[in-house]
Amino acid sequence: MSRERITALQCGRLRTLLGLLGTDNAFYGPRLKEAGLDRDLPSLDVFTRRMPFTTKMDLVWDREEHPPYGSNLTFPIGRYSRYCQSSGTASAPLPTLDTPESWSAMLDCWDRVYDAAGVGSDDVLFFAFSFGPFLGFWTAFECALRRGSRSIPGGGLSSEARLQAMQLNAATVLCCTPTYALRLGEILSRQNPVDFADLALKKIIVAGEPGGSVPETRARLESLWPGTRVYDHHGMTEVGPISFEHPDHPMTLCIIEESYLAEVIDHESQQEVAEGETGELVITTLTRTATPLLRYRTGDVVRKVWRDAPPGATFGPVLCLDGGVIGRVDEMVVIRGVNIYPTAVEKVLRRFSEMAEYQVIQSTRDSMAELEVVVEPQAGGTIPASELSSRIARALHSAFALRIPVRSVDPGTLPKAEFKSRRWIKQ
Image (cartoon, rainbow, N blue to C red; front, side, top):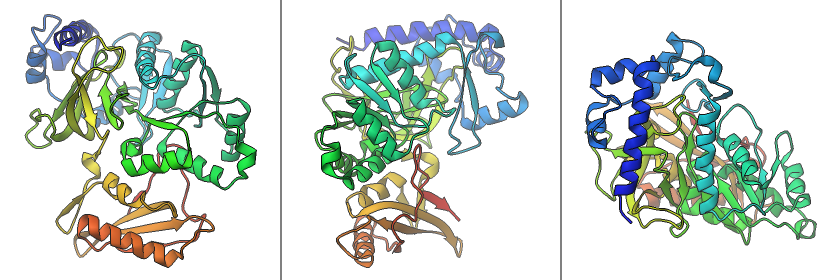
């Protein structure tokens, strides 16, 4: 087992892709010509040295100049059958098209996610999301169907109705965001235990947010869902499903290297970081050829590590992300000289089971960035709200050596997200 096998596969797929783009893709064709790259690519090193990065703003500007889908289309428009769009977390939602072949390639990636989590055709999967135009769980749902697993769509249902549907259909696997898994678990904890004593749930696959690889969030999830194991996964609408959790290393995500060429670069020097160091994840799609991205700067901050090959892999070691997605380059804030990522704040707050929800308000005072944390206690909590706020404030001070104001609001005040949460509010 060596890296030679995967390197040869990646190089071969990249050569095929460059051959397609050089003649048929108006977005990348001129860029490849300028970089001197084509289907005769000698090595991956040559590609990473010569090919410039692609950024989110490149995609935004391209769609503005060539509405509505942009010019990054490898095939005639009649070949495209699938539509999705980004969630609009960092910019306006960006529409993306896929051919049946590229869509199928993304379903192949979800096969890796399910295989690593031990999901079989006899499992019953419940998808607790709204089935809107974002990509994430659509590919998860259709891959499960293709594998022969009974798949229950939970769109258009209340949280209580979803719990009832999970019980009625004996769902063994729940797929949703970490935020919504917490929400369902908290609702379940307030129900009569007898009513849901026969829930068959064994596994929760989370995506859409970093919480699945935040130890405190995972511990909270598994306490709300006794007897289950949480599996993390991450991807992006722009590139597709990128990683799966290593079965032997919880909270370590393996890049699906058959489908993606991944780099982890220093944000400033733009050079590859050493093992164990953090940097920005850069992705080149190898199998999603209809709307490919070459050296796409994802903005995800990750820690690069190598791990032994998981079961079923034909090469090793594998490139992994220790702790999943640690944060985002554009989300880090500097508060009185201290660098703070949202995931670091979540790690502190999730230690408090008495807290149901939270928001972080970021503002500027006298040209300096400031934070305030707003917490919502659990209904019928065992400690006063003022005491909970004080405890959280002390924990934040201990973690960051900063005094961050914490105030509480009445239960039911803060919004509850079904898909991606928006807990950080800029004022």
